[in-house]
Length: 326
Ligand code: UDP
Image 1 (tube, rainbow, N blue to C red):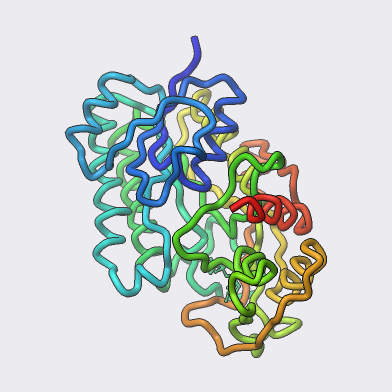
Image 2: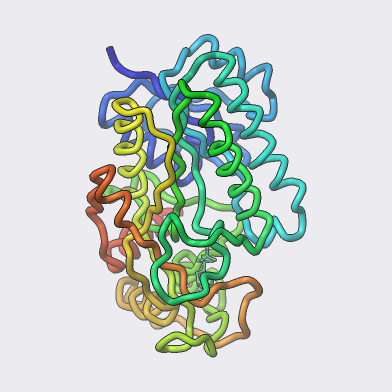
C-alpha cells in the first residue's frame, strides 16, 4: 500500500520540490494550499485542494477524507522584513495555525509530522563556527521567533503524546531549481541574494546591491550556507522514511556545512549568466548575521542524508535556467 502524505503549502517553492520527490517515490499525495504564494503549475504530482489552514473545519474534512499517514507542513509566511512590520501575521500564520493543525492531527490520530523550521531560529550566532542543533536559539525577528515557538511546542508535547512523532527541519539558504527547469521559485517580490543577482543579470533591476561590506568576514560581506532545493527535498524524504520506522521527535539542520560570501555568490552569478551586471556596495541590512552556516553532522549521521548538489555553480545554473523562463 502506498503511504499517503498530506502536504500543506505544497504549491510553494520548497513544497513543490518535495512533492516532486514524493511523487517520484510513489507516495500518494494530497496538497492543501491557499495559493497565496503558491502556484498550481508548480504541482507536478498529487491532487491539489485549494484551502487555507486557518480554515480548520475545511482542513478537518480534508484530513478525514484523505486519512494521511503523515503530514508535512510548509504553509507559512516567510518574509523576515514583513514579519518585523506585521508580527501578528507571523504568530497567527506560523504559530497559531500550526498549533491548531497539530491539535487536529492528535484528534485524528495522525502520528507523523514534518515541520518546516528555519536557521532564523539561531539569530546572530556568536561564533564563526557552523551552528549545531544544540546552539543557542535567539531569533532576532518575529519570523524566526514564530517558528521557534512551534519547535518548543512540539518538544513540550512529545512526553505527553507518545504516539505522535515529529521531525523539524531547519532550512538554511535554500536556492536553485529543478534540473529540468519544470519548477522553481516564483515570487511577488524577490529579496533573496541569488534571485536578485539573476534579476540584475536580466536587467529587471538596475543593479545588485551588496548589503554591507564591513562585516568581520574575510571579504567583509556576509556568509551563508546555500543549499539546493532538491537536497532539501531529499532531506524531507529521509526524515519521513525515518519517522515511519522509528518513533523519534527531533530537529535537524539542513545545510551543506560551509558557506559563501555575498561577493562569491555575485561572482558565480556573473560567471553562470555571462552578464557583468552592475553591483553597488550599500549599507548593512538590519538583522543580517555575518555568518550563518549549518553543522549538518546530525542529519548526515542519523538520517543518512546525502546531499547531491553541493555546488554553488549548479545551484545558480538551475536557478538561472528557471529564471529565464519567468
Ligand atoms: N543580500 C545582498 N543583496 C541583496 C540580497 C541579499 O547583499 O540584494 C545579502 C544579505 O544581506 C545576506 C545574504 O545576501 O547577507 C543572503 O540574504 P538572503 O536575503 O538571500 O537570505 P537570508 O540569509 O537573509 O535568509
